[in-house]
Length: 549
Image (cartoon, rainbow, N blue to C red; front, side, top):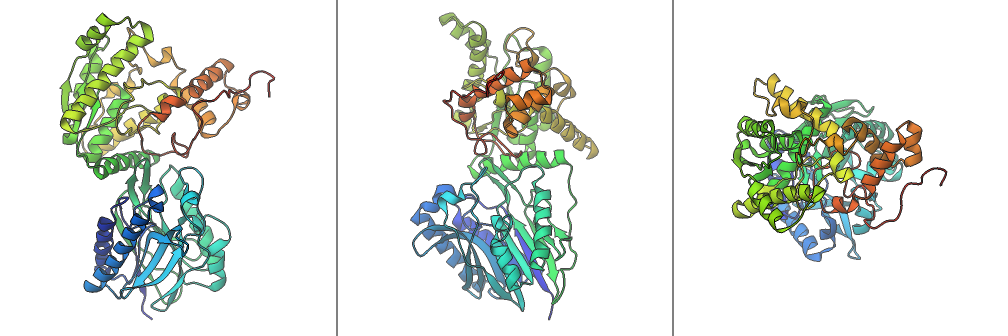
């Protein structure tokens, strides 16, 4: 028996674009055939994109998905690809009409098998249990003399279930179709999981994952194959479409193939942010972005990400100095724009602020907010006239404590560093500049934007530390309170000062309404604001103090 060449097609699909996704299946199957593959695996929900949320409940969408599947069957045969076995994801329906997350196996213009995902995640960003019905039957198909078991994503995360059943039935290969969103460190968890499952089924595991972005989710790809003892034998690079090839002999484990090297954690997070922004821009029909350039680190990092995502020429940076803006900040903003090749413009806000203040008495914070809101009006005006997507530049630390102005610096259609805390913003900026130097290029971010004390520059001599604890301390408290759900007592037991804890918790708790109104942004941590963390806006709960329990 000749070796069976398997292709893992790590592709970027678009939710709702069933015709375009079908085109991609045919095109990538053709590439796989040209490379000698006989079995082609595509990610979860390939034809529909993922996640489709309540589109799953529409009969019209289900009909379109099935029509696209039938179109793929016809075209594969017409293009001479009908003898390949192709496994792909789509939207299914139970006999009772319930939606299912389905994998289909096709060959020769026919559907050989349909498999409905058994375990439906209902945590974090997932709500599949609400929209899908669970499957109950296993799926094993013959592919040129090999028994190939098929499961979908969450099915291998749960002990027992379909994987255990396949182990009892005996398979030569376990194929896993995935739409596994990115979060830092998750790649290691997937690899470790597959390394456990392979010995359980006594067979190699082929894990194909989608790549690209959908709203606030990023998919990193990172598809791989492990041998029956869990040893990695092949792996795709992250954040790019890729066709991973691996040969399965008539007996034994797959032959070693391409095994992409792991990347530095900061490079991985930065690449996720670039992928998230690029996907949101392109899939929503934009070709350019606009953002305010203050000369500070946050807008500088966002501008660099945007330039890497869609090209510097498609980035419009707007300097909007006020009477409080320092000359070095204005110089840094202009310098950044030159470095990334952005379209840079200057629109002073003083005349507009003066016009408001001549009609209204807006002292203190109200006056500071006015400046931010005038800047928001300018950015939205440019967007309306020229069609750019407005980017909000706030980071996770600011979002956590409400250190932003609604209808001001919070305006925008997308927030690229929404899930990046301030400490990581500096690290990513350093990494991006170092990467540029290593590649023989120009660092995109001016050094002074990284090293100077952060300031909103909304009042004379203002710095962030006037209102907030130092960011390294703030981020440590936020990580414990927000991401690990530790309460006041636990934070004090860690050794944090009581005054710091009480201040940070009060800021976080009363800023929920602001977070609800903030634009979406790419999830890169285990717990991002949005789908991951769902708290009521109106709530009387506050962490107990003293001896109250």
